[in-house]
Image (cartoon, rainbow, N blue to C red; front, top):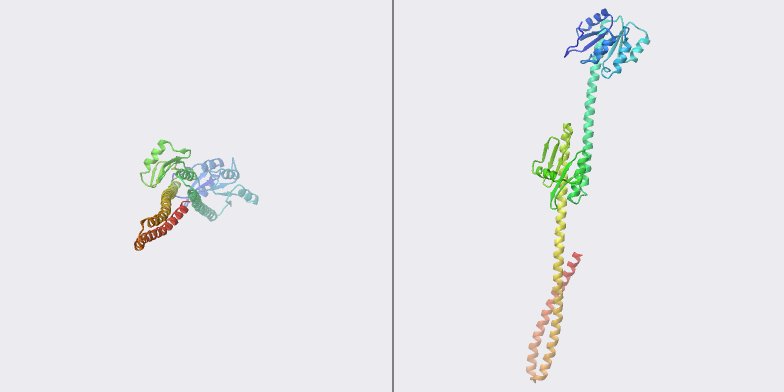
Length: 382
């Protein structure tokens, strides 16, 4: 009878444990056509075989043996993590209900009474092996489902961290704050590194402690000109036109998580890129607004000067007309002109004065429009 395990058995391995050689031989002859059968003549030997690899797929265990009996052997098998999953069928002449109950109490899966029916024993062995195989398959399915569920839950948790990080981007109004928000987002994944922002406000390169050192700034600036995603061992960089991030502790021991993190980091950098464009656009709009405000103030001041000069000119013109009229009246008195001459001179002078008054009227209309424009410009600059 074989007593050594083959390296790669093609069939189920059955260990028969009995201190009676005749019983061992009978059971072995019965099972050998279907299974690889091995024998142990004591509980101690059975335990040694069960602890070694490859392990038996099923154990047929006699109860009454010298040394430790079958019950104690089974109890030790089921107590040890290395052998607790091996199914046990007790084969015994003890038929009392107490003996059966004790067999179940110590972990046995079935109980066969000697003398046994050959077909019954083979059927019980076959059924139990099928049950164990189905249970193992079910356990594998459950393990796979649990693994998928855990992966999905982890992925959802990671996605939640990404969304949480990107929500903070909307509150960032400058490059320094945005660079720190990127690092905080990386930290949600347990990642460390450097972030860099480039744009109208210049360049900001930060790490978790604050401003990055010159070497870090040099490395990330160099990698910014590479591909969108570049990985070298535990380091990875994600690059956009205005944003670069460099991670220094990627979990390379977990390729699946590493792949998910690559996607999350690319989206994190992409979200920051959009925020940089918004910050730059806001900054440019503010700059243009200030420029326009300064221009409006200069135009307003100039128009105010023109308005003031025009009003002064109108007053001076009226005064000049009044003075001219008085001087003409004095000339009439001294010149001793005839009536026709006075009427002629008055006509010429009156025509000139009327023309001057018409011009002043046109200027007054334009002056009112100019004053209105000045008022509107003042309101815009306030």
